[in-house]
Length: 111
Picture 1 (cartoon, rainbow, N blue to C red):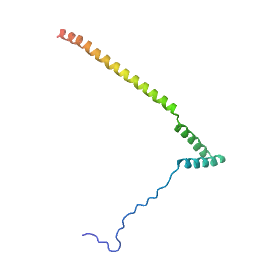
Picture 2 (cartoon, rainbow, N blue to C red; picture 1 turned 180 degrees about the horizontal axis):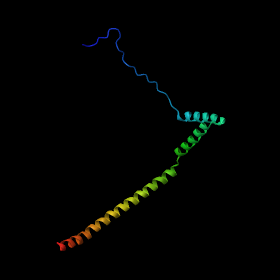
Picture 3 (cartoon, rainbow, N blue to C red; picture 1 turned 120 degrees about the vertical axis):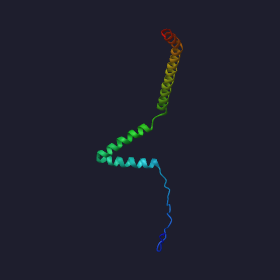
Picture 4 (tube, rainbow, N blue to C red; picture 1 turned 90 degrees about the horizontal axis):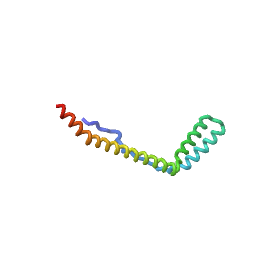
């Protein structure tokens, strides 16, 4: 038998979403200002955070010249790999077509 609710009926769940604007530049500025204030006190944790943030910003700002150099190097290595693979396949085919008849003749004479 079904349970009948006498006192309270269930209410529907409401979704309450309030969108917020996020400004990463402002947040970064506030973070830097706080770290400068902490750095004045000589806090070692603040120094670690400052060094880490400096490394993070330096790697994020890689110039387009550096990226271009990397892509050229990758393309050059890919071309080299393709050339080596083609040369190996041609070598294997040449060996197969020239050595296979010789091996076949050698095995027929011994039988």
